[in-house]
Length: 326
Ligand code: ASP
Image (cartoon, rainbow, N blue to C red; front, side, top):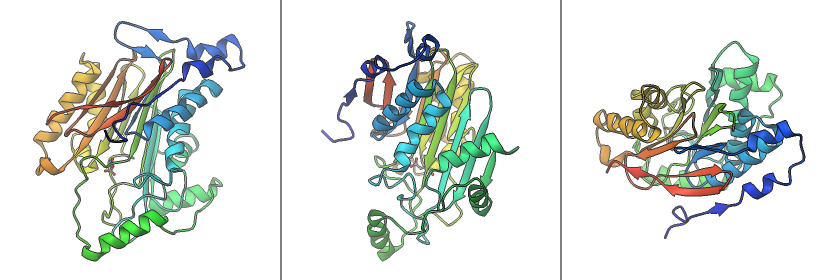
């Protein structure tokens, strides 16, 4: 059994008991169960979602803010040197430059994102700064970098991580430009969370498709494609070949399907069906979606087997294999 498929369980419930705080501070952890769901709850893509969820959960305990939680969770992944698809250690574009995309959103419609940004260790925090400190939703490229400098974000040296350098050197032997994502090997992290009171937030961060054209932007920073959150309905996030997800406005589509009465699982399945219908060479393309509705009921679905996700509730933090279309 692969590491990715291994069932991982961490006790999150126990740690809440040691939290100092007032009754209202602890209320974010009054776990609420309904026949269909549970709150609070955090969902995130892939096996790195397990430590990311743990970081998010700890932050939710600390600040009672689901926005703080989804930011802190994916910041953990942005620092993971073993991860070649998130953060500055991610695989570069075909010019050998690592560029990052990220977005963040809360259920009241506030959102921010950065695209094609260089030298910033935590693009998710830069996306949050766009959301909170500018009148805009999205900053890209040099403008995003300038904004980061103005906000006091340190600029990192522009140098590939040792692992990324090895992979890039191998790729350069053929320099074959193939915008196809390995079925089991995307590492973008998308995270969606709901607190005990039903407030939602989400985050998504990536170095994008390996060896992409310089300037390519994927779904992750596009509000409605890689991430969408609405307190009236629920939230969704995506991973996989961004071009296919953008074409169907994947995350927005899932939230709208839930608004019309579909369950999170039905909504994810319908989004994958549409994506499959509109994509050529579907045998080589992977994409996966996660969704949660207001009750804390969840859904997950992918084009191919291999997609997994981490789910954290008061009873634990588990890695689950998603169902798939094929
Ligand atoms: N969705 C990301 C992108 O297309 C890639 C991924 O999830 O691996 O940029």
